[in-house]
Image (cartoon, rainbow, N blue to C red; front, side, top):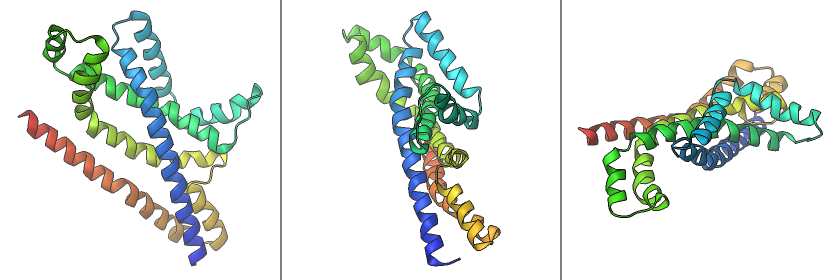
Length: 213
């Protein structure tokens, strides 16, 4: 395998990182809305967002990508591979992050909210200044863990023709006919992306556990 093939794999890494970032950032914004709706106290809103989470957590990511890419085309909405996988991963991430952050919001001691009410803070001020900062700290290990899973999950985007790291590996493998070498490098590149994040998540989890003692 030559320099050109290796540079092509690195280009696949760039698209993997870009797709992960889009899915995580857009999914995080939507997920925050989902989490707040899940803890709003409104029966209808909580049921609707609960059904949304159940739908995306209860179906395979591969099927979700198929529905976005091929299903929307059946009703006249044609998306290119990049747009389809970006939407698919955003929806997928929003459901998981919404549930992670819902649990973190509910894990904030109730006394904090009651104290904020006693100080006369409204819902928006309580949420922004009291609840969310603490919930974010609680959720960091699980959030980082999900980001690691999201990065690895981008390999499924190859099924709709999106050229991320796994598809780039397949293309190079079919060119040089050295699948063990090529996918060994692909695996090492995934490891290089995910391992530092896993270490960070473990560190934050231990740090948070120590602070709770």
